[in-house]
Image 1 (cartoon, one colour):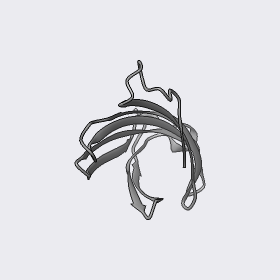
Image 2 (image 1 turned 45 degrees about the horizontal axis):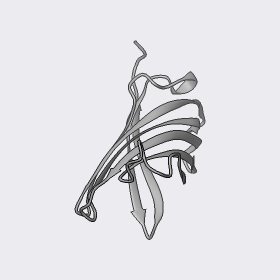
Image 3 (image 1 turned 30 degrees about the horizontal axis):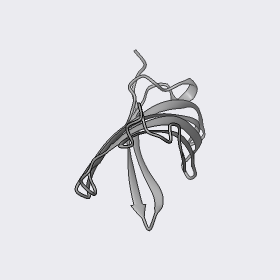
Length: 124
């Protein structure tokens, strides 16, 4: 995963606010790349922050081609994380149309791993 600051001085000159680009690769049942953007806010209290992000994932999932969007909402309260990453409803394309799900991110020794729980529903 590659996060690149888009506004090194912070948003609107506020050093506690940040914006980053997301460039990620997935390997396993999901063979894909993603591109997106993140907005983050740090606080004066160590270990407290929040972020939101949207990324477009493009590739294959169990051999099905297409793309979908993921929405992140994360909060860290004095080191205690709360994170939700969900598939944006009706964002699936091609063979991934109708995808719904949740991505769980685990970080161990600085390495990210993912569990993706998903289903397919009938297109409206």
